[in-house]
Image (cartoon, rainbow, N blue to C red; front, side, top):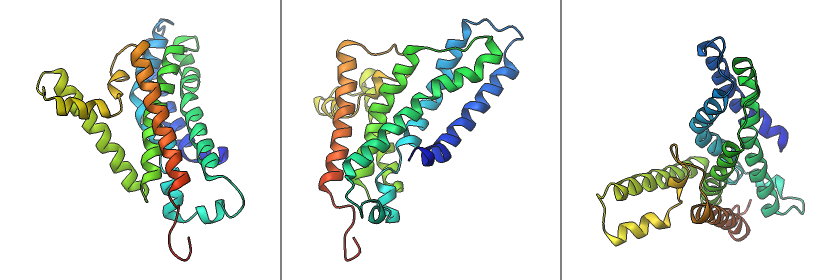
Length: 229
């Protein structure tokens, strides 16, 4: 599983981070201040964290279902719940490695290896929330394409509704209730500080609920149907 992750999403992530590091090295001053490394690290990871989370968690269940791999994977007494939870956790570890890997890539530009625990924590929270949504949609759909469409619809709807409510364009309690029921991505977007207190609890509990719901679907919903299931 680790080998497949490294060869697939991991190789693409490494290529993107390598390109970003080379671009920074070519455009940064000859003696860039070391203190600017953490800011550059946070900005780059803030731009790639969302696609990285989707890439690392995408197609976990729906891909195996669409290709029929589950027939081989679970022909032995292997727990589908444990299998897909392990795969999801490894995807999170892969996303988390983006911070130190990019830090090493930025070392020639700043003379130090920039690293920020806050940036790493933000990556983890984003993967918990967005990766949890991807896992839930993957378990609920039959193909990776439908999974991606479902994730995109939820993310876009949440962003639009929250933006309109913040700007006073939607005051209806119904729309506020709909927005409140959607994943709280607004706690992690833009240049916002790392959530604490109630916001942190909201993100963590919502993410854990999505992961738990996805695993419950894996447990309760048949992976296949028909004579070859």
